[in-house]
Every structure is written in C-alpha cells, then in structure tokens.
Length: 277
Length: 132
Image 1: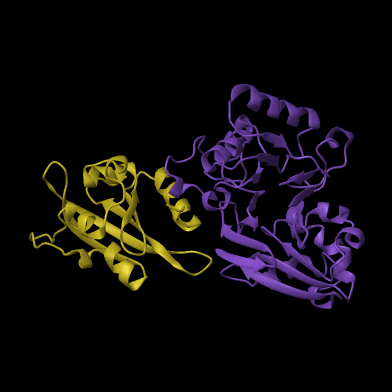
Image 2: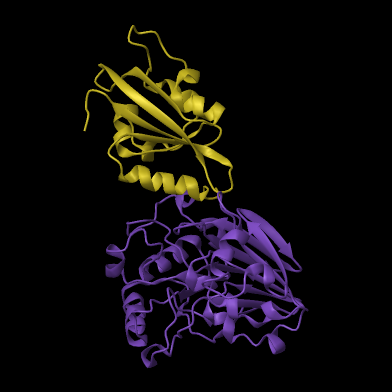
C-alpha cells in the first residue's frame, strides 16, 4: 500500500517561499494498492494529482472527513468532475439536519462557484457515512465521528494486513493537556488503535493550543501522546498551521523530539512525499 | 474495550467542566461516568467505582419523597429517559453523605448524535439548598 501526501497544510493554502519544504496545499492524501485507489479529502492538494497517469480507472472514490473549506476547496476544480466518462463517488459525514448533497451544494453552486452540483458533467454519486465500515474492492474503510467542530469523520483504511488511520482535523480532548486515562473516553481511539501509519493533526505548539481550545485541532504534543496511547506504529504530523514557516515547524518538531522519548517514528508531513506501508 | 461514541465522550468533557453533579449512562443504564461534584452524592470517586449497573446506582443514594416513601429506580428521571428516550425531570429527596435528607431537582436528557442513534443519557442534579 502506498500513501501519498498531496496537501499537508491546514486552514488555508499558502504559496510563500518560507513554507515550501512542508508544502502549501490543503489536505489531500491518496492511498494506492495494486488493486485500487482512494482519495482522502479534496483540499487544494487534489489539484496536484495527475489523474490521467495515476488514476486511469473510470471510477474515483473521494472520502471527505468534513466540509470545512480547506478540505473541499480543490473539489470544484478537480478535472475528473468535468469528464462525463468518469464516475465520481463522494463519501462524507452525515448530518442530522441537511443531506451531504445539500451541504456540498452550498459551496458548489453560485455565487461561490458558477456551476451547480447537479450540472457537473461526471456521473456523481454521493454517499453519507457515520460510524460504519465500508468495503471497496480490497479496501475496508471504517469511519467514525471524531472530536472537531461540525460533523467530522476519521477514517481507518485497511488493505490486507496494512492499516492507515487518517485524522487530519482532530482534538481528542478539549482544553486539557492529557488524554483521559481510560481508552474508552479517547476520541478516535478505535480508528487509530495499532495502525501501521497514523496521519494526525498537529497544528499548534503546546503554548498556542492553550488559547485555542475547542477550535478542533491538536498540539504537536497531543498528536504524539495520542499516537502513543493508541499504539499506532508510525506518526505523520499533519495539518501544518499556515501561520508557521518551515523553520517554525521544524523547531516545533525538534522541541518535541528533544523533550520526549516515544518508541515510534515521528515525521513531519511533507507535500509530495510517498510512504510505503 | 472499544471507545465510546463521540457524543458520550464530548458529554463527559462537558461534565468535567461543570460544577453541578452530572451522571452519564449508556443505553442499558450502566453508569459510565460521574463528575467530581456528583461524587459528593455517591460518596465515592468515579476512579474508585468505575462503571456501575443501574441497580446499584439507582438505590445507592436512597431517593425518596418528602414523606420518606422510597422512589424505585424506574421513578428516577434518568431511568425514565433510558426507557422513553425523551427528557425527564423530577424533584425529590436523597440522603446526603452526612445523613441529612436533601432536596434535589434532576433533569435527564437523551444523548442522540448525528446518526440519530440513542447513545445513552445525561442527568444534571441540582441541589435546591445550595443554589449557585
């Protein structure tokens, strides 16, 4: 299984020189095996995917964690959506008030976008997910609602014996520096438990988080603590703050590594990087 | 043990921030969590008791009417919400730790998340003699 990070930045895309190392595109990750491919989130990172070369299939499956702008803003300009021969399956969180199609249409319609969702040329299929497991070819995708403002899913993707957990926007505990001691009370625990790779929100420094409880994101320390608790085997620190330069992100990482002694590899997400599981 | 659904986890996080006693139960009525102010009613810390079946917590603080008539578990708002899945409220008396009879008001609400699944219920206890 291959995991490629097409967009690693949180909140909004950046293009500054000082952010080039870790990337400026907002969240998008592809997971590929010999038998199929999935796309996780449709931030501006999705625009960097070479669909002709890398997604030859007529069917494309995009799993959205939630509908905050940084996770869907690439969708409107995603080439396959405008190809009538393509079958696009959009999967995303259900809500108790409005359908996923209605909520997507808030963005994919005038005045924010010239073409309403119903007029998009591809064959569009919209699937609502909650706490459930979906089988797609050889992929088994488990979704669960996690702690983040608005309906937000985390995903656990299993392919054979390999497992990837994707929690790009996640605040496992609000306003505290330590997780609850009991695993049963840790948001996202089921999804991340024992995963071979955990891609997790790490937007803030510990100090920044103190003034942003409830914003839905984790400190870099919380991301590591969560990985340690769930016994995931490798941590990718994801959803970099657009206010942080490469230098600042590296400093956050160095400080974490200097002050802690976790027994699993911890890496900063780098846009364009491909990971093999 | 798998983690609870997010609605229960966030309910606990809310309870942790409140100064009024809060109980959280699962759909079967098992007491999953109570916050430190609720420890004064049960007389034990949650860390010491852990989860508790309804038969235990429903009688442990001796709920009764003003005249002393005991209230069975099914008469308690939280237990009613468990069976009806709608909010319930009642004012009654309990024996506090010092043995005095204390008048409290209890409001129980169902916890139903985006999946529209009944995940449990939460009760807030209000000690009428110690208003904030």
